[in-house]
Length: 444
Length: 158
Image 1 (cartoon, chains in turn red, cyan):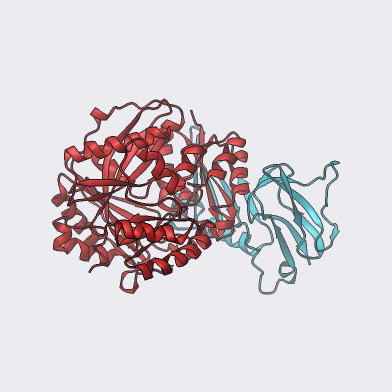
Image 2 (spheres, one colour):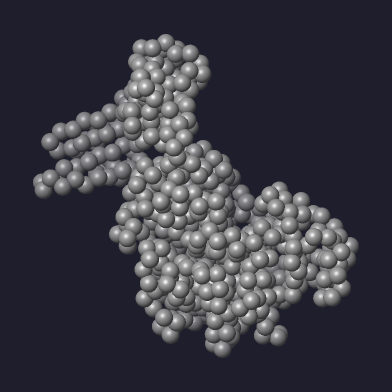
């Protein structure tokens, strides 16, 4: 049993974790940078410590100060949220050395899934289909050989990649040659690791991810899929559950594959197995596993009724799963729109400024996870997510109608946001009819 | 500026409220409305970092934000020359060296770069060095207490 958890994060996810802790009767410790002193997560936590100045490398990534805060406050565990230290194996080890529980996978699972090429090999061993692809490219001629065999387009990916960084699609031998050297230097500057691999690229495929949940006894279940096909430069903008294109039969097949993949590495807690789903052939391919709670987790919570953050914490307290696969039902439909401080008319470039007005949407079937308020300053140091608006309805149509209403009600003045984009999208006939694939936005 | 007002109800149960100096807090502390504002101003203008008082009905604590040097009063030459020394680490403050001898005491003349204290972070003792030269006029935190990043530990009269 945890008495106290330190939350090594900020923004809406820090609030989400504080909320779960309060419901579980666990006390919370917030950390913050000098510019986040007024933040809601600081106000709502039971205790709070300033860990450094604005730049994340000196505050939210400042391991000595964060560990020190946990030790001083006598926290039993650290919840990393997503981003920052959530996928840092070294941090997992440091927590362990100080007898602090890291709420997340063990170091081995994290490292294995963090190495995208190794992850593919591991899941392939338990019959989870993977995209045609290569191991780490040692010499460029291996890349050309792959291109001859499978044809273009091809996706170049960084072994250490994530969040769309170090990725590019190439359509010819020339582009491949150039892309390899560009991706290499990009990957090196982003991750300090320039190793690359290739995958067959499927422009018309859908990005379908399965939520899994496992305890430390080896029980793993899946909570259905999320469809994250509305992306911009490989950054998700709209997510929904369930997917329009996944039949109950495919859900079972893909869900079972996701559970096999998680069991293969002895995974516990919450995790996400990402697949590409080719609608024309009804084939699915493992892309990667995310070993953390994800931004879009609320859509799964809405359609399954399972509180994922609460379960994640419970699993870490060595409690067993109290539900089995047959008890998981997908009911209704949920959509999440990410409201980012970005200018949709200017290539979605992040913007800064002060939120002058913030009018929250509400009413039946609308949930808002946000950390902003009127007067909130959007600073250039952290990611641009301002709010997640989640709508729920008995079916997709109702969820869309409610989201449409929520996007009409919401108002954020002072900074440009993705709200106009979402309003347009919700009116788009192809979105309404569910004919969206990952290449959709770029093709407009 | 942070203001804490604690009401003491009949049962003796403490309800604690933390808030910005905003409408809420003033409403909550209706009975000290104008007084509270005045107190906040006094603390803000002063060289002191916090003020506490306690009566039968109410406990008030007004604390300046860490990392923000005291506001110099327009005419105050003394306030102007008061420089804060802040912690760059989060950890346990040690005002004494390994032999138990205090690094410094109030009234000492200190040199730039002189070690004034250490902050223990993950078993590493980080030096807190004077960024200015002058006379040490105040030590704000007790030995062995936790301190956070940006917290003012000392005031030095330059």
